[in-house]
Image 1 (cartoon, rainbow, N blue to C red):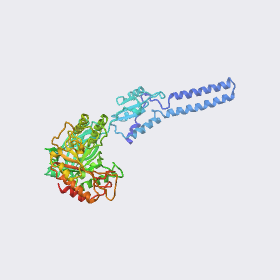
Image 2: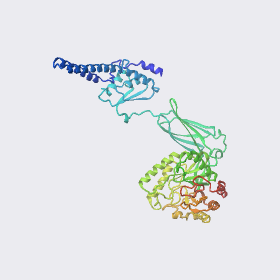
Image 3: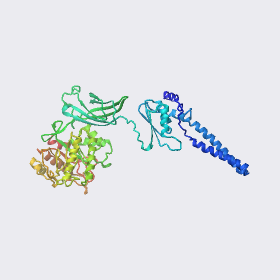
Image 4: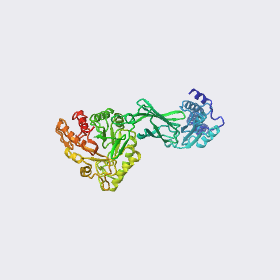
Length: 584
């Protein structure tokens, strides 16, 4: 700063006759001087012509006061001069000496007046561009032409631009900071590489660097020079360098082995690093092969539980980060490998913990009550936002845009609502091809990737009969609804039972206003009914996965495996044994 101050003191404005005006306008001097002269004349007239001594004395006093004011104004004008070592020159020197600016880029001077500060800045930093903006009212006599003439006379016209404008509506474009705006990370499992699709805040980056590590060991580092604001980089994972001979067993992400790669993304300009983002990804692949749901190219049986994500003390907002962790740990302890988040876009913190602890997640959005064009437009926008926000989470393996024809009650025959369902599915796939999409979970399907069915049959014997063969499944009318909307049919999709059970049991109390799909009056009866239903599901040769209703009680719905407070209705080990007793 001392060097900057010394340079300031070497700059003297007005050496070539430039007019920088003054904060004390000359019009004020003329006004006060005129009034003083008038008072003097009136005092002479009072004494010499009208012989009114008292009035003459008053005018003499007025003239003396106005003369004193004129002298003070003249002194102020001199002190506030922009040139000749005046106070404003000193103020401008101090301002620029303390400005944290390296001399590269742009400066904005709001209320530039005669252009003195703008011109001084341009003389100080010869590589900078300076923009001065002002309304230039008539009181001070400043104007755009004066500023431009002064800049030209001082030899900085090429650096300075002056414009008329309102500081509240600035159209001055500052140089944006350079940072990573977004990055979609897609694991390409079969090729053992990962794709980064990035977008920067602005163009002009000299490099974008992607550094990858696995369990503290270096995996890869790639640097790209972007041509504009966005780009795409593929990074091959060095399996040999990581000393992992079996990619699927040692590097892949699954709920059982939630392995994550750490990533550091740096953006650079000509001066160095401008942004650093730390994130992660999991190498996992979701696909359907020959009518089977596959995880990392292997058939995978999904054992999900319906999770509405409510807490008694805070409803849809978790009371703490630990509450997310507790729910995930309880879910896994009961032998489930995933959750279907129901009518809720879950908090990213939950998804983060599901990534690192290992839990599959089906993403879902709240449904509408009635169909309309306005609803459809909002739904498209909100779904795209949700998918883009949560795209990078390896735990998410499926999207569920509609549930049980909620908001599309006439979808069976209504072509608009069928088109809306299909539009949602293909719209989601247009931004995310790495996951499966369930078109309308439960019934009245159109073109979804999975045939998902809701069946709350309380009898294990009857439930087993419903799913004893594919022919039996395709003849079902769950909830007295058809499995497919008119004009649509089964195309070999994997069959999953994605809502069932819902056994109500309220330990130690009798609650008359709660509900479930069937009842148990004791812990033993509750365990027996759960085992009966799960045995029927596990023994089906058709079902490739399920989602039990539900994880916890929610308000009047007291049909959870846990109470609203996450208390146990039966031991976790017993639930796990039932979940794993018939199918590993």
